[in-house]
Amino acid sequence: MDVAAIAQALFGGLVGGALVPYLTHAREKRAARSAVRQRLAEVERRRWAKSKDYAEEVEFEAAVAAFEAEAVSAGLPRSVVGVYAAAAYVSFDSTRRTYGKYSEPDIPPGLPDMGWLSGDVDAVVVAARDLVADAIWRPVLSAATRDWRIRGIRQTVELLRDTEDPDTDWQAWAERNFRMTDGLRNVRKRLRAKGGAGGKPLPPPDTPKARRATLAGEPTGSD
Image (cartoon, rainbow, N blue to C red; front, side, top):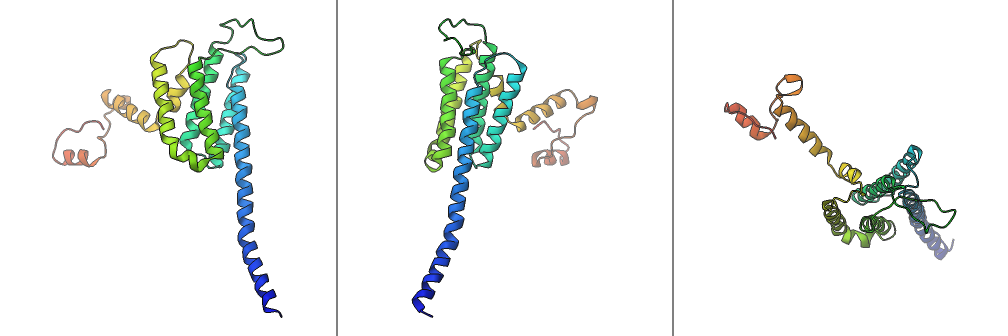
């Protein structure tokens, strides 16, 4: 058998064996990113409340849940997914709150009326949306600026919340950015202040400092 033919066959097999999985993986990644983009577009469409019906709220929540599941499955950073989902909730809750509050005589016939949203608040949602879009299509480049962009969004939200705009509903933002560990810590502090759940004293916190204080016979405080 021709040595050149054997070498060519071996080389082709090696290249093909390495190339096929790579191409398959690349194709799957593109499909996953496209699916996230579709879910993102659905949330963008539904974040503007067009009524105060409970059914619309359920549909919006389902759209956000589907987006989050698809985005995490596709490997998008949870911080990016979370900040956009929280901002989208602010948009929906605020436009639902203000639906019918302001008249819009210039709305063309046939187009649905929608609630009102501050331009500054909408800018926050758009910034979070662009963060998701960059994570989908430019993951490496966006990773370099991700943290300071998220920090900028959060700082802007804090400034907007200080304005106490009655038309903007920030409850979902506060709930989605409240760490579970903070919530549990507050529960423990409140129970210890009341003498424990059901009137029974709670055991001291199991920390090195508390154990040393217990051995020394000193009173232990809350963590």
